[in-house]
Image 1 (spheres, one colour):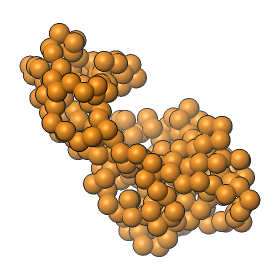
Image 2 (image 1 turned 180 degrees about the vertical axis):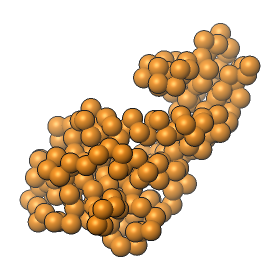
Image 3 (image 1 turned 135 degrees about the vertical axis):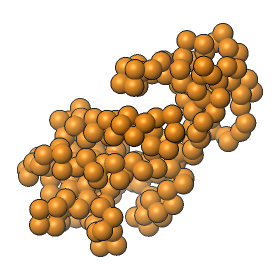
Length: 229
């Protein structure tokens, strides 16, 4: 059992992560200090936790794509780099909420709308100030931001954090343009592997990544168990 310090402090709850080790049941004396246990398993299976009830589960898919550093694309002038053309964090909040509509923090009814929105606002703020992202790219139509993506580079690998396109602008290849900007950046900065995670239930995102050359890297099943009061 591993206490998630950041999550616990942010939500003012005691939250732990448990990686399943083959037991079908967790005894109460291991977990009675926590309000929420986030159970993660490689295989989808039925597990009970004494003193807790399940309230949400999802399958998280991580995709990966190798980056060909010899095939660097031209810069797409319709995609803006926040480092060069900065925008207010407020301009990305609504898009962040849209990108998180399949999030477990959105779909678990024990998290309030305010908690979900505070989390995604923090994600945007900490992406723009470089704590959670190396780069942020975005597109716009006149004065409206139409899409954005955040990217965290770590030596030879990079991870897409958030990516979203405003509903009324979907179907205009904005997601593809944002992805091309990410891939171009990765190719120019010696990234060999690009990763992105989404929910299996988000079929539109899964199709998008697979069309853009991503393959399934792994699948993780995540369940929320809340303490019985």
